[in-house]
Length: 93
Image (cartoon, rainbow, N blue to C red; front, side, top):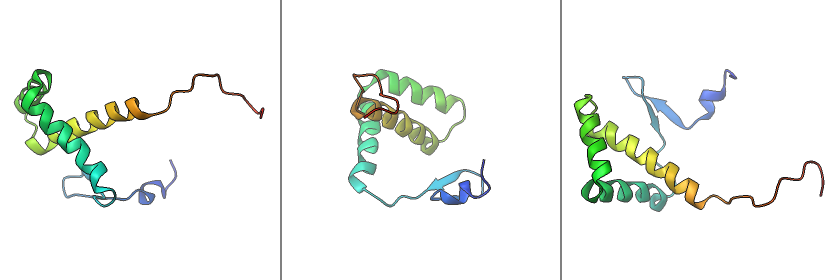
């Protein structure tokens, strides 16, 4: 890993060693995972079971919400990313 790679990231470290990402940027895009997670917490039994399990493991509410947002972001990304239907042409135009 390059010595300057971490400094290139837009993050800082908290006292407990966790990274705090930059909260700037597209507010609608940041709000979408929040809405997804809190809707799932109210209505989805799997998400509610996950929340209970992680609570029993000693995680804080904030840590659990952060994990759920990451899961939601991965799911959304996989739904919206383009899927190549043809094999990639190597070196040909």
